[in-house]
Length: 351
Image 1: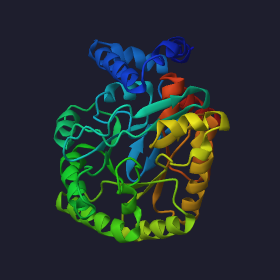
Image 2: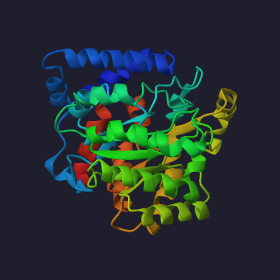
Image 3: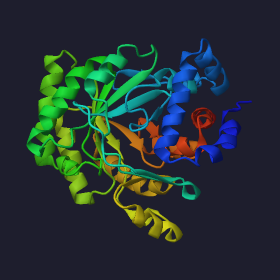
């Protein structure tokens, strides 16, 4: 019987005594140390259990051993890829990666609401920069699908966004299996404006030209969208993306909607200030956006579901709605590493 979940639940109260970024740093330090121990990841893979063979699927020409992936934002710099593979993830999306290093927004910038399994963050694309991440990707483990989530630097003006995406793409794309363009984080001023068709079209055209120049025409290219768009604007964006020639969409990013927080915690969240919310309360909003997109997205384009997914039933619902893949993040913080195996086993039992 897998023991990862009860073990995590035993240490979680201690871990949650620390500020989220401190806890993140401790967890990653332990993960890096564990990866360096001979046989460590093999033991972890045994405890977690491999995804059932019938979970494997082909999406955009890539073979995913499971439809369950790690969303961007947790492993920004591709530091724990062997560990994620051992846990049973079908894929990992690293980043968001900016072309040049930047520290992100001032701290504190991440907060938890454990009783609601919600996280507020305003990290602001803290990134080591594409060159550092690219060197690390040269040592990535075999047999794991890796996506690269790319963003622009904070100080880059909107008119220079394409140059930033192209600079990061040149370094990261040859070293990953797919690329996701992040134009939907609420924590970089003005970034979400780039979702509008008049801004998004030239970015996608420029990246598709670069993809061809680099000989990567077969590599999938996705765009990640926000959950807060009015549906008429969302429809126009989906239409533009469908006409662009890219591979598909990821939805959703975090939300600015404080309405997903319970009344008893609303004042606390408001006091924390700016930032996007993710976690269990986002699921309904993300699903509404997902289904709106899927109603309008050509079947030839792939869709990755993200936002509030934390149970096998929710993952199965997203796949039944029409998603090709699902991504998790916040639920992993609250449920621990055993969640991945639980999702894989739950999906296998439903297939």
